[in-house]
Amino acid sequence: MSRVPVIAGNWKMNTTPSEGAELASDLKDRLSGYEGAEVIIAPPFTHLFQVGAEISDSPIKLASQNMSDKESGAYTGEISPKMLIGLGCEYVIIGHSERRQYFGETDFIVNAKLHTAIKNGIKPIICIGETLDERDKGQAFDVVSLQLDLGLANVEKNGARTIIIAYEPVWAIGTGKTASDDQAQEIHGFIREKLEKCLGTEIASETRILYGGSVKRDNVDGLMAKPDIDGALVGGASLNAESFERIVKFKEL
Ligand code: PGA
Image (cartoon, rainbow, N blue to C red; front, top):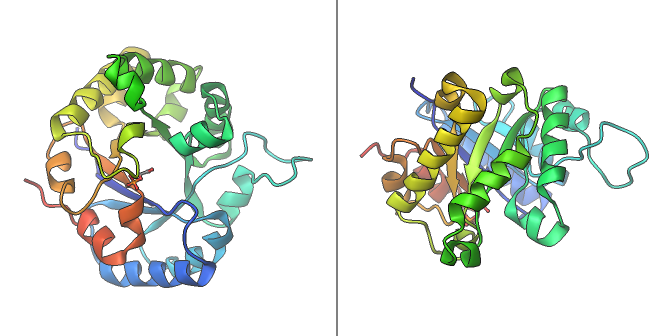
């Protein structure tokens, strides 16, 4: 089956609210009428209202970069799925490597957030990927496999249909180093086989698997030409409207 490509921009902790609104407005103009990919942007929490208003009359979709695994209550500083949905978020990024690395997010927390997201109707973008040390030791496949087993534990088929997977080798994030097209495809193919075993052929063939890690205008076309690469999760290059536009409008090689 054909999978609609997804290009998602993760702004991380960048831009002020007014800069974010300006970037969103610029993107909206540049991408107006473009239907070649599903476009998602994930601004900081503080920008969601304003950016959401800016893109409300465009096909660009809103995501948050994180979310609580709790639904409501005395959890100071946390943001619930209903709050995000109320601001127009259709997607939430879960388990980004920076959350795992700097904020102690484990696969168990990722799994709890995944279930909370599915239960509340916000679509999860689950991030997985190995570190350089793990790759050098030949453990990349094992690491990704375990992250999938634990992160997707007990997910039901209907919920699984809403999930996007983002493979982001940690050594390629923000470093300028990208996995080669073949290295990325190798892991993407492996992820799809694994999904097939856990969730069946139909869901595995429908699930979009994005690549992330120093995706830029110069490397997006080669990556997108690979059969199991269905899109990109873009960090740095999503902060510039012109470069993000070029990535969204990747050329089918
Ligand atoms: P990068 O970030 O494109 O700046 O490498 C990707 C990501 O962390 O999602």
